[in-house]
Length: 54
Image (tube, helix red, strand yellow):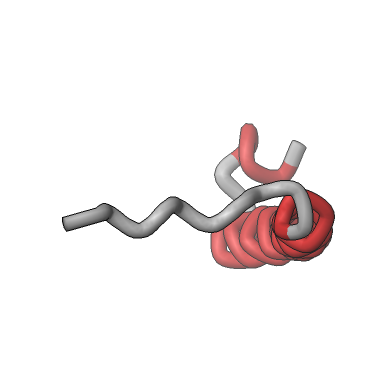
């Protein structure tokens, strides 16, 4: 309601920024951890590429 009335726009912007950071950090951590787990899990399944024969 404060933003709609044009009151305390700085406080509204700061609140939105803090909310955005607070929402993004857990998602980033979850993405990084799941990527590491996936790479570790798939790492044992891949075979190295064969060497080219001359």
